[in-house]
Length: 242
Image 1 (cartoon, rainbow, N blue to C red):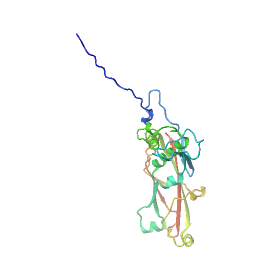
Image 2 (spheres, rainbow, N blue to C red; image 1 turned 60 degrees about the vertical axis):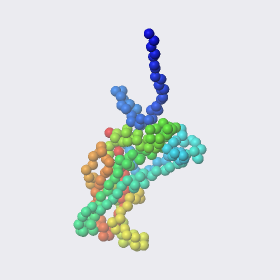
Image 3 (cartoon, one colour; image 1 turned 180 degrees about the vertical axis):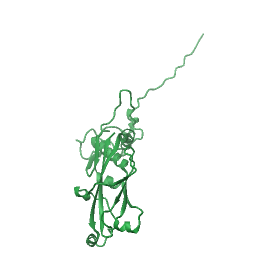
Image 4 (tube, rainbow, N blue to C red; image 1 turned 135 degrees about the vertical axis):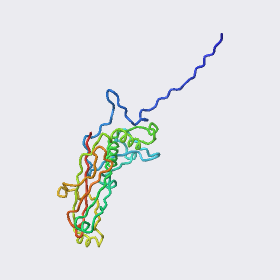
């Protein structure tokens, strides 16, 4: 009796572990990139560099002791980060309050701020150094770092504290100096306001969940009448490990 045995042949290919950016926990624990236990988003700047050419994926060399033309340097200021992730608006109020005790609301995109901060710090530390974009699912090192932060790190933090600063100025004096630029009802985020004497101890934080801080909403009432005074403001954010 004659029989024919047919065997299928398969090729075995390795898949880089960087294709999966979700760290899986095991009974004995898992691996996780070290991050700060306490993060203070103040007025510091963070400097990092990566290759800015071709596909612009965010590739970094093994260390920063390389020729200057290999990578492009970036400096990210945390004040700019906060400025791009916050809005200030007037609350609905009667005419008397508007002039004498103006009520304001600031909405801060806290999770965006913390996410970008962690991205800057990871680029600064060159954690993803020498990884090729072809070894990543989305073919982008920078996007993959954001995915890693979202999947593994951001939920390990809780909101700890906000420091709010306000500095008042006389509208009539400053308008004369700035050639009648309208300064009433026009507060702006200004790092020069970040001084101990401008610290506001009591601010009203609205419906805050310290573990789910997508947005932080605070309300602030002017302590000086808007008919005569304007103000600039600043804030710092603190986050801690859960």
